Image (cartoon, rainbow, N blue to C red):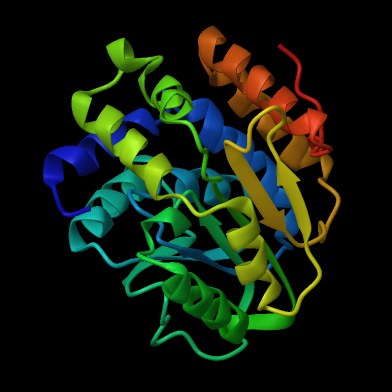
Length: 264
């Protein structure tokens, strides 16, 4: 993603009050119990760092490394982290299928949100998950989420275009392209299994629009984190909170519950 207009559009929808801010908040909430105090966390294909910034704010005692193969994205990520006043994250240039420069067993946790579909084929997907296993400690945590490939073009267009009046044409097209490029749930599961680690799998109900693969939670949320989550949730616009609850219900029906309930 080296087109600056598309990169800016992507960053905008995931910004604090952007169209998809509820989605970034949802995954930040679900990722946080996987991270322990003092962890070193790798975010592969971090993009403009909207997700990374949220998670880093929720886990100030952990250190984060955002990796991306796009210099333009890393420039945008630096802006995002600076605007969010995040001081516990660094950015590095690199290919997620290789992770060169990342030492073996040097990461306590590895996360990847909505980026695996950018890989060109199953070989690259398998290579990426093997690289993740190499850099992850034996007792480490992980959280991967991505689209699951849908069969019908009409369904793809519904998800990409139902809010097209609120998003740029660049984002709408990239959204559709991303879903068309997605791996199937079974293909993703086979690749995750290559790591040889126990994992939990959750798929959105009714349609495999999105799938999560994660390790078991590694900590219980403390009161301070719960209060911060509630505060951040309360700062979302009403429409975003409603979208959050609807999305959470999609996963909840599939057995993926929130680690803590949030009040309007």
